[in-house]
Image (tube, rainbow, N blue to C red):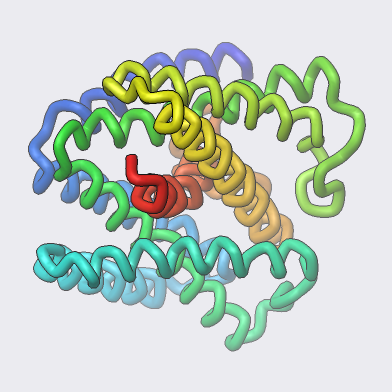
Length: 273
């Protein structure tokens, strides 16, 4: 299993770097949109939708929304509002974690609610990516945002393995510990400051802002991971898919990213970075 995970990562990391750094923003948006639609397909399964026709109809609706937002992307207020709605959703999701049995039964109302939540997860993340990618040094900021998530995963894994005793959310994700959270925050904060330095952010106050940016982004990534774990537990599913050997599906790889991106962008704006 570990060998599978390593081999898959060796393929995916260079591919992800190429997608982030090489294409123009319009092509980047198309590629990311296609990946997110594939993740949305997995999401419909987590929501309890079994009929292929219904799942395809929901993907079509999502695609129409993405196309409309792409056409309107020049309207800055629409882009900002869309990303901010994503941040608001993730703040609200804290209540869902507290009341983890909410909407667990597969009623039509609960399925519809979870499908709607999918739009609040995927669309703001996509808007955050294309908006940031189109800025000066945008691809490098996108890379930094993704690196923060990767750093959080790495820090959480090793600190959790070495020091993890106290469980973070045992009824939702028994493997996560508070030691893992601290390791993720520390490594993520360090990567953010180093990334800021490499992006020519040298003023001490600005570097402090980069530290804050890293910490809040990592915190959001942990939240995203927990929410997907909650929905998988409610659906009685171990992995969202089988696309990546040893890694599960797209959602299993992107759950933290979906939460981190809107928070990264809004925090970056508020901190003046």
